[in-house]
Structures are given as structure tokens and as C-alpha cells.
Length: 95
Image (tube, rainbow, N blue to C red; front, side, top):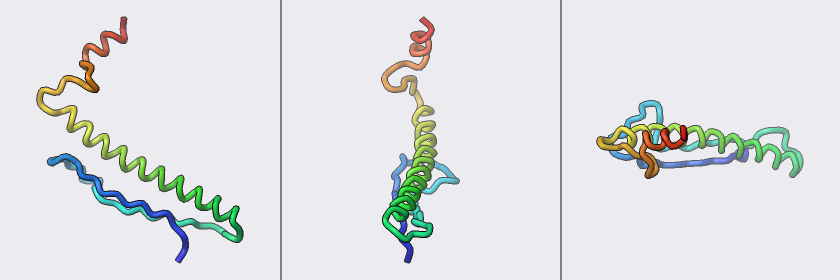
């Protein structure tokens, strides 16, 4: 068995959130590959596997954030983001 970096997550999005191309539960497995003959090569390969894991996890979680964020913005009566009114914020930037 070759060494690998394994990340698992299970998200609990709000009820009614649908994302057909996203799974709320995922396990990612990135192998530490290469001609590993000493510690320096092992840590170089491990660093690459960790970077790949971080990149993929970040992409997946960003996609979920976007889906849930759009749902939150579309809630009835929602006119504020982070405590500032959407129209008011744009007007302040112009002044």
C-alpha cells in the first residue's frame, strides 16, 4: 500500500438545497507518488499531495458555498448582505 493523503467531509446544507453535480459527502484520496528513496524525496512528494488535496477540497467547498449563498440571497425579504443594504453600499462607493 502506497502512502496517501485522505480527506473526508460530510456537509449538512440547508433543507431544499439542491446541487445535482455536488455530493455533500466525499472522500478524497491523493497518493504520495514518485521515486521515493530518501526523506527529502518523500517530503517533496508529500507536499505535492497535500497541495493537490487542498486545491480539490477548496474547489469543492467553494462550489457548495456558491450554491448555498445563492439560496440565502434569494430568500424572501432578503435585502442585506453582511448588515449593509445592497443599494446603499453601491451608493456609498460612488461618493
